Amino acid sequence: MKNKELLEAFHLLAEKLEIKIMKGKGDFSGGDCVVNNENVIVINNNKPIEQRLNTLAGCFKKHNLDGLYIIPALREYIDNANRLDF
Image 1 (cartoon, rainbow, N blue to C red):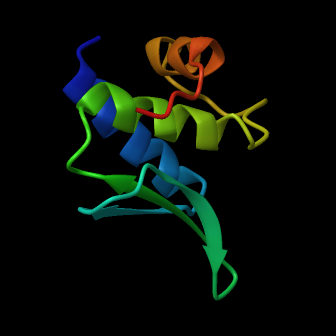
Image 2 (tube, one colour; image 1 turned 90 degrees about the horizontal axis):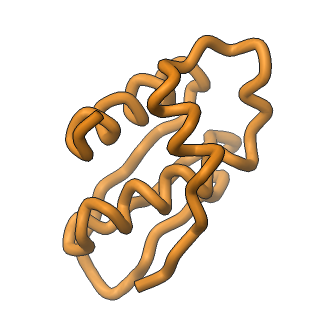
């Protein structure tokens, strides 16, 4: 699966879990937080797509994804990803 397809799959997964993905540009790596009782993941569009994917995978690793259908390529990416900060 290509990186752009993985990124799109992460956005679909976020919708299922009611997590908002916000994109920004600046001097930050990205990560997850809770704002007004809403789960939010912030990704930096200035970073390479690989880093954005690793940020998303690291954030989704914190959630219980058991019993939720996730396309196999995305589940494998989440399971194998190591959170890297560039």
